[in-house]
Image (tube, rainbow, N blue to C red; front, side, top):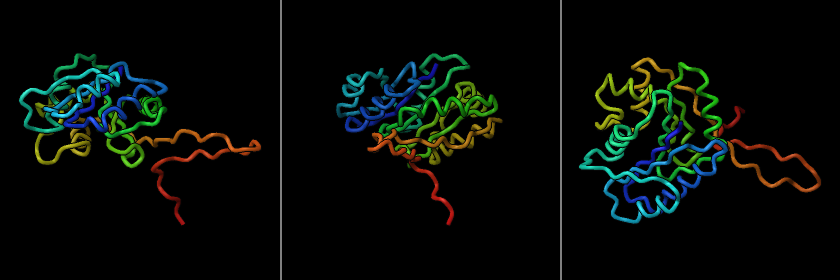
Length: 196
């Protein structure tokens, strides 16, 4: 099972795009959860209308990391399951999860991420077992200190013995075919420029 978790504080204007991009995956997640962190706007209603489940934080003082810790402590999952963590403004291209799953075929790889510039924000597919190893070692899933986010989590995963896969390129949707049967090149969004 793949459970997608989107921590959100007052993200009514952006959360629908993230949820919609998850529903459009060629291999969609089984669960889409928006963790609303004391939102005062319409985040909850927008997320529900888009087809996500909504969880509410309780006494969270640690922003996104605290919201993720509460979600990961609450959602029941098996050790073989996967967690997709993404920012509310992320719009994943339809093939992202399928490519990320292929990158996790190596059982020593604990997580793979998308290139942030390719998807409009941070997104990472992480083994639940790897997150549990971090929790066992550090007493939390995500660091709630001043250095938080995917970089800190990546360091924690490596510290407990997991390898990180190279970032998954996010391909753009193919444009409409050109006239006269000319081949259409496939562009990689966020790809590194070729060396001169």
